[in-house]
Amino acid sequence: MEEPKFIFITGGVLSSLGKGVAAASIATLLESCGYRITLSKFDPYINVDPGTMSPYQHGEVFVTEDGAETDLDLGHYERFTSVTLGRDNNQTTGKIYLSVIEKERKGKYLGKTVQVIPHITNEIKDRIFKVAKNVDFVIVEIGGTVGDIEGLPFLEAIRQMRNELGKERTLFVHLTLVPFLKSSEELKTKPTQHSVKELRAIGIQPDLILCRTEKWLSDDIKDKIALFCNVKPKNVITAIDVKNIYQVPLFFKREGLPERVFEELNLPFREGDLSPWVNLINKMESLEGEVVVGMVGKYVALKDAYKSLIEALVHGGVENNVRVIFKWINAEEIDDENIEDYLGDVDSILVPGGFGERGIEGKIKAIKYAREKKIPFFGICLGMQCATIEFARNVCGLKDANSTEFDENTPYKIFFKLRELVDVEEFGGTMRLGGFECDLKKDSLARRIYGKDRVVERHRHRYEFNLEYEEILKKCGLSFSGKSPDGKFVEIVELKDHPWFLGCQFHPEFKSRPLYPHPLFVSFINAAISFKENRNE
Ligand code: GLN
Image (tube, rainbow, N blue to C red; front, side, top):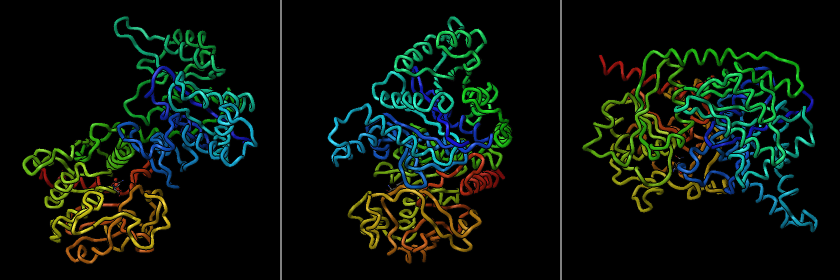
């Protein structure tokens, strides 16, 4: 296609209807037809990025290859497609206002009164166009719910885009809820009617309505929604509840969604190849065994905080033909008396990334347990740091060894801040973010798993291993199997006399996709299966 087309996804009625997965699934379908796609998320909050928000507020912070801290929907976008997104694919009200205000301070508006329309809306449109390079479709998800005050500038900007580009280059997709009332046993369309009314009041007439619901919509219901919402009946699509989010593209296909998109945008019909996704679902539905992963973390009550991690473990499970059962363990509750109750029955232990001191001692106890009982252990970022600290304390006898993040006065600073290290001032900011190269040591577990000498993995952390302790830890048996090419940063540690004990300073979960599961997770789950088999023998 010569010029890209824009598909805008808005949401109505309430939040958490799965707009991100809907946007990602539309992208899957278009990509399966051979189209080049990209996705962009516009979040209406005033934070410049979600990096500083609590996981309780926002769920996981997804880190892109180019080092942006973004909304977790970007994780869905990457997992559902083959694209790699970057900082330009996630915008927030904060980012947009910040840049408009900076321009105003520099006198770029030539003395004009700076206003929401046109200055903010132009900035929004510029940022939509910025990602529209070398693609056929840009799928733009507008965060929040129609009717929120915060979302208005975004909706106004996309309204203008329809006016400027016309109907063949823009498509409005609105996701709503059609609840099923158990008492009267009927699906209710009123919330959808109101939501679309709200959207039309600000000048947007949706072309397609995706109705999130627990029952397939009958033709009567679709006709009713079509009539009240001023859309074609065939453009009312059932977005049925699913057990497995990777089914969504296939259900959308069944509802004829690609055909509807092509017709509205005046494109010839193309049949996509969804066979990899069909195979994936078949595989996921016929998994034969299961393994238990003990997840020892801080935000165990909020699964969204570990979204990519959970997905990556599931991908690793599918590749090994097993279901992954998560046993969530609050690190703060672990002590010497109860550790057996928490970890005695798991097939593997994972300590995920995190910030701050809470739960650290519990995590270290869990790691000691995994090391001594030879339970497969995977430490990610903070988990790797805790594993190294545990080893320094309990194997090398460096009593009270720690990271300066948790104890500034520790006698053995095993991890300390990037800027306290020599020669790394050029990083400027306080965190190491995004993709960095890592060289793998010959004959290491990591090298065997990846099957190559150099990998690029994504980072999000402030503290680094202190190389002063490399020799002593090495002598005691810790292997430093992954390092940055310049040798300054330790990326992977592992234990030799253990079936599977590996900690990595990066977050491999951000790069795992269902069709391309990450090798570390595949190998970890494989080790859990072996552990379980041996225990049962
Ligand atoms: N808190 C640690 C650091 O900043 C680990 C970060 C993480 O696990 N993402 O280095």
